Length: 356
Image 1 (tube, rainbow, N blue to C red):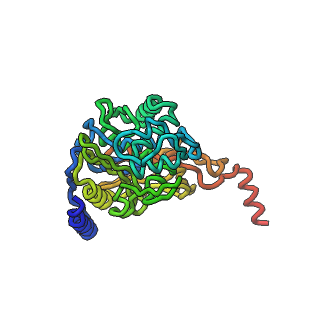
Image 2 (tube, rainbow, N blue to C red):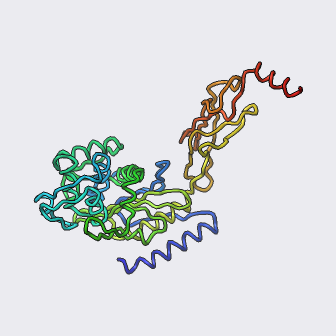
């Protein structure tokens, strides 16, 4: 499979060049049984294939394991490896019963080496038991809106009660990419820590420009699974493929398509003037961008919830900018008064003083 990748890479680069020269992007197709390409900031799905099908997800499970562990644990904690953890089947960071490592070291082994042993050691330490940790995993999945997912273990070994969907895994990736510690670890290519040198299994870090991680996976029943994120020109996209024998190439094709066909249009930038009303500058209280295909255009509706009359202090909320696509709202940003409007009497006095 890897031998064919450079040819697929060349084809993807040619497609991207065609998109730039013609102003349009050709449709993309992948060999995965299920796939999703999502804009990270907006959550807009740019491509999908069987996105809601419940499937085995193998070691991409460890994205959720890491997210829960970082949230509920302490990276500097010392973890003593149990016999159960040391003898866990499948991919491994080669833990030994009784050895002691920091939780941070185990997380590197979890995300870089895809250590099933690391997953069990992390779960036992953070959750008190594997069962207790898995309960936290399922609670977190529900909090993230992963309605078609169920987790039975922290490492992704095949189980009838362990499954997710391409769409749900994209939601998980969005949450994971919002965690700086997880991104730091998942984007590391090679690290020496805790007496071990570990190399990331995720070859997209080398294959795809701007790749930030996240996680590979494989079991015989699940096939190859892959969740990744890439950034170009300030826009981040998330790609998920399940049961895909050509996942390295498919992720690159998805990114080349998505960045070309749906560039993010920045509609508001934190602290910048969006408009003027009666001579008063209206300032964006947050940033907002939306991926737009060729021919699409966002409409902006200004909604003021208070009159722009003195007295009014700079920074006071005065309304919202509402953004819509094809009549459907896709986002809104609060509007702040951009300058102080003093009381009229004070304004008049200042005017008199200026003539003296």
